[in-house]
Image 1: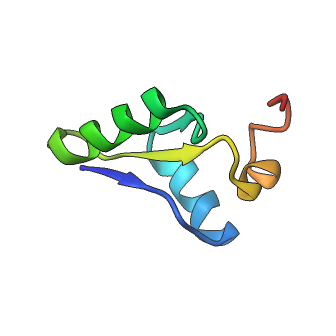
Image 2: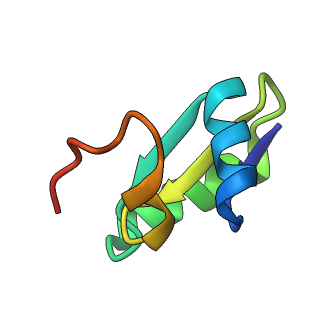
Image 3: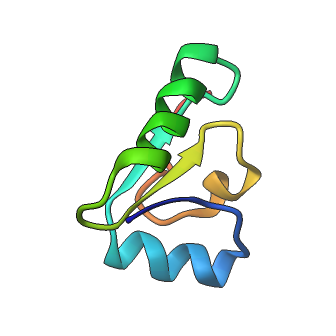
Length: 68
């Protein structure tokens, strides 16, 4: 199961500790279409997509070295 994330910080911290998280560029049409395709077709292990433009990324543990 694949999910796109829209979350508060508590949920985000729980999710990032338990599941694989894929960061993607939400302004890139190819990236966004690929995410939509995967969301529609993937049936395996759960993982989550988070847009690089998400303000929640600034406070997620382990991502403090992420450059803009």
